[in-house]
Length: 372
View 1 (tube, rainbow, N blue to C red):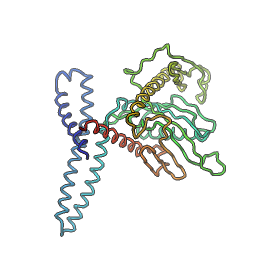
View 2 (spheres, one colour):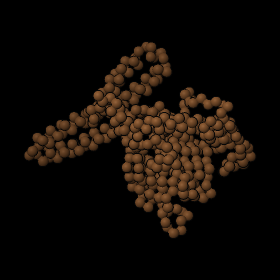
View 3 (spheres, rainbow, N blue to C red):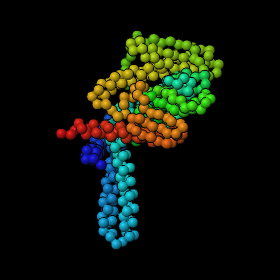
View 4 (cartoon, helix red, strand yellow):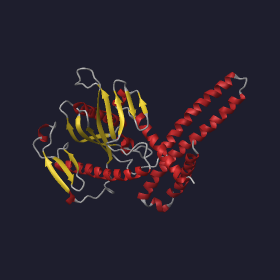
């Protein structure tokens, strides 16, 4: 482990001792908001400290096993035992080192938030819409694995199946380190390309088509961008698609346009116009928030281009090659030959690799900033 990371971890342990003292102070206990904040920080710091203690213990085990191997010149059984312990310790150290790097990634304030996932068909006509449906299934299956709740905010189905556009809201509790839905899915934003023989292809030729995905954090209502009602145009209309008699008899669908930016959000899935308006307003606020975030990210990228990219829809981030059963993420040169299981929601290897790459990038930037 790099010296910079070890120093960072030592500071985390020192901070844990500070938190122990703070949480026992009477003025903190009487201030519930501060008490909850410090309790969350203490919980996260305790997990990091526990992992670091495991790492140092395994490093000590490795050193002992290496010394044992050096001494076991004429004892084959002892040498074999030492070699087995060395291999096990090295594997544990690599695992703990990766886990600690993830834990030390600077937190985005939105990481714990629910997320809106927008999937839009791009080039490729009907095949692109079918692929959008496949991506929809992939993300919903992944959410099922995580026991997250999925809600369709708006959808525009294509005639042959799939979607021209679909917007999901995904919500679930953050993990022990405070990473929630947005923190897990944030790197899915960008262009997704598929290479396969379409169902409509009669001559067996491989076609290439594409979809775009955008993952937006649901804004915290307490700190959300304030929108002037005078800047909004609100239209109501009859929803289309499946939904029984009610959906076609009332003007329950809502479309909201933010006039200064031209950003539009709509919702037609609920039975109530009031409920649809509230959901559309959340999506609109998220899109305006993301526009502001993207503009700031573009300025930062001019100084330091990130490995993971800006998350803009124009970034081609991934290729799904069905004939080869291959998924390739172009940002980190990751190739996995398990495409069918990934399309069934087995996304952990992909998402973890992206988080590790982003963490290494951020930690390197921090190291450069503190270096003399």
